[in-house]
Image (tube, rainbow, N blue to C red; front, side, top):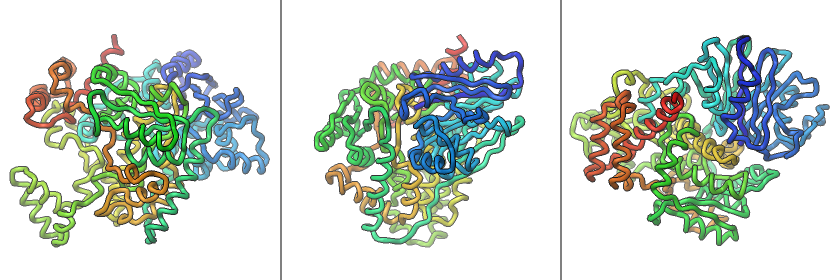
Length: 617
């Protein structure tokens, strides 16, 4: 899990070598094995290395071509690098290393930006072409690796890198809060806009590349998810999944260091583990809980059946609360997916035994694993009524007091574009508006944010539409970001074999009824996994990575801890304190379950204090 940072500036007042070293040191956790930087009149590049493939100094970065006209900093893994290297050697290119990094350099020399179409892997990189005096910056297909950029500097310097926090060391960077980011965050639980919580700092979208030249930015898309279904039998697609996943895991296990796997009780990580058969697996759960909040025994049982050594950690409430500021620091932006915290502990545990870890992220999005994708039996019956009649009932129900029946009628008369914004929906718009101060109300609505994605899949079935929305927003903005940041916090590399472009191409052809039906979600994947997993694991219901936060804040110690933050001067800047305290009080008294509302506000306040208060001291 390497990291890089760079800048282009015309300022003569900056000691470029000193500044790039400070920026590199800020992300030292991403690459503890070595560092390096390159400075010329036009661009400065810095790199922190975690050694994975070719452990020699020949693979150090920045890496250059033979005449030093091309320099590269690269974070990720190119899994088909060996075949690409053979192809490029046949075309006359000379390699000095056995690393996947070098295939990007020679691939660019041979194919230009079209090299992106030939790569299979996860990546973010910046390539300086001295002859063209241009930067070629790209991010992988799914957004597995992060990449940020900004020109929010006093002298129009251009900054880019793996983590936003490295920009804070650039003397001309203007650190400002993006006021428009808070309201959408309350609903989505993560930073969903292209512009981050730092004003003027942007994420390069997955499947996009950028050319920076003469102070100008030109961004283009080079790849997108496709759902072009082809009818075929269940048995046909079970076989396709088996073949494609076996190949993907074979590629993802390539490493010159130790490889292990994360293992919960669910089918996704269990399937990866069964295909990989590592020496060790790693699991976490919560103290004083069994079952839904602690599946470590289930993970240990599967490991034993597969003949694998399992390591587990049980997390206490005190440990959980103590590490929240550190988790939010590593996330760069506020992110209130509760599973980020146990993932931090899981990565810490794994880092003591392995450097590369495989995990099951992406299976739900690609193969239809979420409950949202499934239509209930009652709704399927109701949908036999003509839509215009259901629309009338929906509009009428909106005017009535909210209850189970009116909610059903409202949803039954809505198109998927009106009711689904992605897997996470915390605050509804009404409550978000109620808790926020006036200065933070100006922001796009959730529907406006996802509308572009829906336009791209107009005419597709509803399951494909929801999958696409999740793959454009939820997956890179939440799932993959926490996977990258929590693993890199402990200097390990996390790989996700489900998120392989060959897997996606195959899965995009599977009809919706084989993915989601009245039997199960992820139906066809479960059938394929059942070939190597016992029934108990292949058919286990999805539970995610649950955390007993809702129980903890009913205890006086943690209730008081959260209340102190809610009543702080920081909270008064952003929130109507009476409203957020009301949610906390009702939850504490057992009158309602407001745990997700409380956590989402609390995390933002912890994050803001860490980046905008503590750093100013």
